[in-house]
Length: 143
Image (cartoon, rainbow, N blue to C red; front, side, top):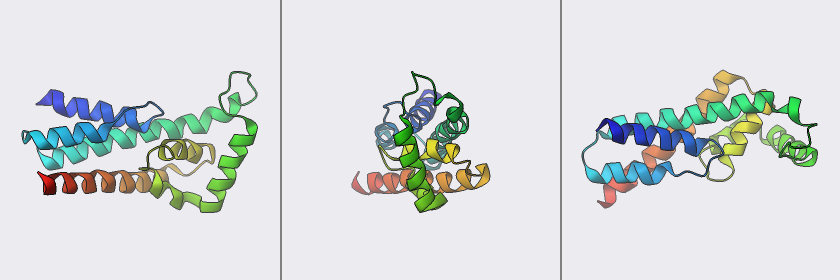
């Protein structure tokens, strides 16, 4: 049983970073098995995913000191574009941190923009827990 929870935690953590991982499939599989506590699965998935987003936020806080390096993966143009979008929509855009493809970079940009950690943590936790909650409800409805 512990292995299932740990697997979900690491899948959720990795999925929140820039790694190509899927935590939703792991959560659904564990729910369908019927051997795990719904609430504990939701807590484990949310905590893992939020902690992965915190890693992105921390990377964003320190990324600017490397932007002049040749190996830096983001062009100054793209970094400025991300800043402009974040300034336009502000911290409320973190409610989209659960969305595939845009959510992970959004949490990194929040770090670059020096979003206060308390607000970042609150909005990201709300968004990611809601996603897992809806996914669990849909899964349990159809099984």
